[in-house]
Length: 324
Image 1 (tube, rainbow, N blue to C red):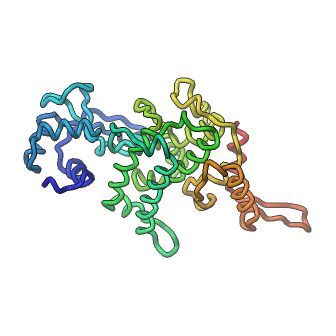
Image 2 (image 1 turned 45 degrees about the vertical axis):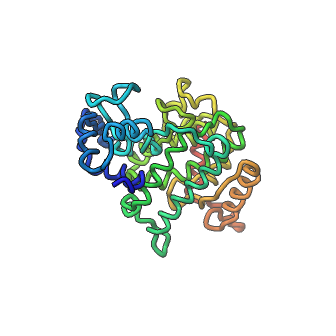
Image 3 (image 1 turned 90 degrees about the vertical axis):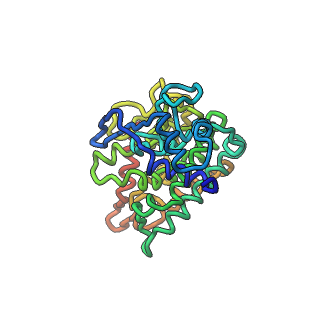
């Protein structure tokens, strides 16, 4: 059926293409399975479900980054070993790697913030569909929503965003917005951590590919503690967030501790999600920090006893500052 849109085609491949595990590894108890099929299996599948030249279709899927050949970048052959990008597990695999973006992206190069805002709007619509009256989100329902799979394919375009071409203000605003989008994306993809260990692994294991660096992804810790905090050690970590070998190592900006009032890690105590702009990032950070401090539930001052009490979030931010 050639009238099917690309997301429907990829979804069908993901659900019905016979994929076999090749090896298993474990990261904090999470199974990571690399699954492949032969080029012959892919051609047979396409002949069964679609009225098309199966070999040319398979070649087009490789060209579009829907499938990846484990044999290199040569021409498609039926003896090739093929991996379907969208079938890879979410944990330990970059969230924007449901496909490998192989085409040029005018949006990523000329208006990366506009691209990110469009993708955030796409995800926000899905989240709102599955939110109750109290604002709690059913992330299982989000993951099963066909629109979420469309979003996963669309977010692959972020692979072409060049952080290295941004000034510090633009980079800071872009990464704050990106971080706040990736957290709910990850909740739907891999779930919400329920223990200290799983939550720690979450911020190291959830990542995104930027700058076309397909060999190295940037984790949530890499975004927050590596770039936004001038490459500091994350709390309870022994090493810096970005090693010198990381392609993102030279992109760190001067640490501005007000980012803690802008980043939302999904906890109830986190500040609300706002949209930040390249042009006014400094003023916007001042406003969100002041707004948070002015709320009585966050900062309480007892004049008779000359004491103050702070919300737990503040102690976490202070711990991050001490780890600098």
